[in-house]
Image (tube, rainbow, N blue to C red; front, side):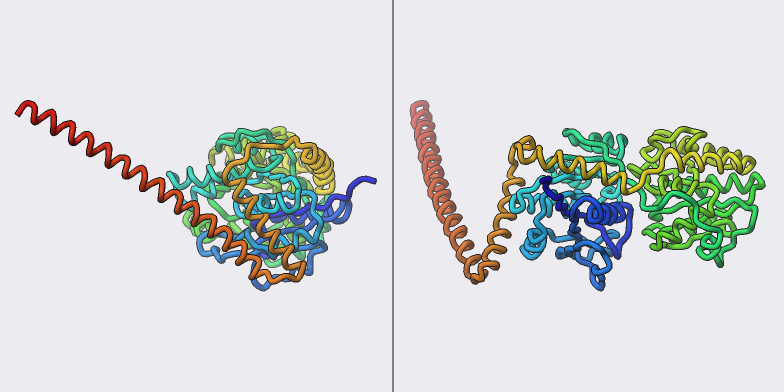
Length: 475
């Protein structure tokens, strides 16, 4: 009888915080639970969350509130309560989706669970790191740690070839498997009634083209290029509406820049929308999706737009443009406002072209989460077999040993608790043993240090005597 998959999915983001990777983890868990076995999700604690709404186990591990500095809470992965909850799920695959706290947690769990770790590279983390710490020594150190964390995993997946090449450029030297993500939006447009309900209250005149962006409101997504392109489109005499859906740290600056460029009457900022049916209605209402990002490694929103028959303008050579045929399943431009504005103006005079390319995208580049996770679960089984056959043995670094030991200590605490023993006494006993061992080592080192110091002093005195004797000979 084939072994049932039991997967622990780990990530630094999860509702109430929504981003592309959180969406990926939710869909992996949902589809695995429905069709392939059992899934549990381990994510940082957020206050006032209701995890009972999810049809799978959600394990919250301790976190620190760092939202003033970054968009996320920082997880603290070394918790025996977390290990206890994860062990209760009888996990045989660990799948981490973020190289920070998530992967430290995965590496701590590997020994107690005796399960392989798969890491998926979703995002160009070097861009986020530079935003947080600047471009210098600290950035290099953080990236080096990220790469070490990734290389410590048993298998590495990337969401596109471009993502894999970006990972290599950061210093990663291992192999990777391309595992594209799917989308949770079904194929086909929604009804006119649903579009009307979702877009009610917004200034969207009939016959005026609607352009759309969905994602984090961050400059590195190419939002400045969108706005500067639209200035030229407006100057050419074309009317339009540009809808931005999303929130983020740069949202206020983007809105202010649109006003400075004289686009206030043309731009609509809805803020974040969490209802996927409403998002789907906006995709169905729009005429063209603008996504000039060279940051994204996969661009799920491009496939989401395609699901609703909406074609995209993308940057040539970007990861988001992988698999797109120019003029057939999307429109490829240079990374410049001049190139993009020229294409938009051309399409404003040829709306049938926009419609046809959107229909082609729906049929040719759409991939469902069911298909994506089916492929992933097939690979899970291969990884599990390789792990049990010893094919992932690697040279153990100090960090591997430390994290493995950390996991073993947490496991000891869990076992002690389950046996009803006094955890405090057992841990104190362990601590006393470790302390006494360290004290003996320190005393031994100190004796050696004193011995070497005395030896050096003796040699120094001999040299002084020899020099003095030589001087006395001449004087």
